[in-house]
Amino acid sequence: MPGRNLSALAGSGKKWQPIGVNSAAAVPLAGAAGSTQTIKVQPPKGFAGRKIIIPSSVGQFFLVNFIKVANQPQIASGDPIHALSFAETVKDNDLEMDRVSPNGPIEVNVTNLDGAAHFFYMTIFGDQDDSGN
Image (cartoon, rainbow, N blue to C red):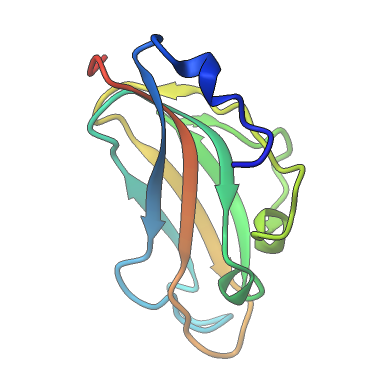
């Protein structure tokens, strides 16, 4: 990542790693039952998210209603954020998400805004604790 000081992680037992957050099925069209879905991932090692990327080809169709780490909200406002706020072209969308313990839950709740069903794809980049804690 441009601007990321990877040397600061050297010797810390942490690595800069991606985690995929992907819907298992297409999120139904806007207004239909199931058009809002919560997608849950459980990293196998301790993880603290620092950057989110949602491809603009996907983000144009979605609102991000919430992001939670171990049930703790990670977005300051309770209002939805358009997924394009996390597009690959956005430079200043770094975050400081709480650290999740190994196999702890990260949950992302999204709403499809479009008149057609779409899969949701997102990547969270962050510091993975290689010690397994």
